[in-house]
Image 1 (spheres, rainbow, N blue to C red):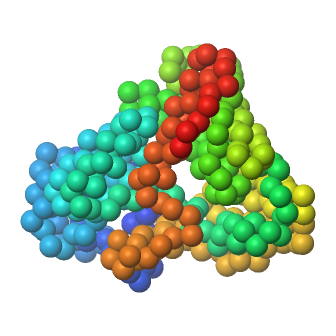
Image 2: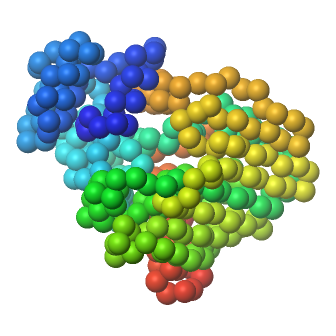
Length: 326
């Protein structure tokens, strides 16, 4: 659902999947539907628009719908898909705040369908290798994480800079990577957050659309995280984990690839993969075979991130340290 640039990337990647197959589309643009039908051999009966997609209920070809639309639309669309009895994969951030996210989780539970979120990095080999090494104690006691996520955003008229569609600015787009990355790299959920916002271009970044946010997280084991989310700087995309026994770095950490990493023992040499191919095969395994991922990708995981983002905005508003109970 949603045949934009990222939907196109996922569709291309799925051509190499062994467990997942593109069988239908939902779009408000008839010309896009026609183009995808021709390119991916999609039958007319599996093509829907935003008015009639509830009819997927009666389509046995479809197991799940991947919702890849602007953030503010996810809530209603995911609930409609769930009511139609289909599993849902939702792009991240899952919703514009934690309360909307929880409603989505509840609706999918009530409908008896799975809700997964597009955390592609949870399946990326370099990332998983660092998590494996951390669990094995190779970095000793984890003390510090740094996450840098950002780029210079272009077209000022795009939906990402429209609060009614995005729910915010950089934090509701690229910032989710450092929020989520801090949790899977350290291996704990944070218990407090502090945050500060900087805005240099109030014309491009209007009221409610954040340009740059620095945020800090505290973890129960004593580790702290220092992170940056921005729409006005390039050359970031770096994760760094430090412990009493060593360190790990991913640079680039979350881009489309190739991801590169090293630890105090030397470079990582995991295979370079197409993230969305690996993600969609893994998600098919979760939905169809009950497989358990190393790092969760369910709706509850996403609600935790949304609670952190809510608290980041709250800390900026109040200037206070916000306690977290995830």
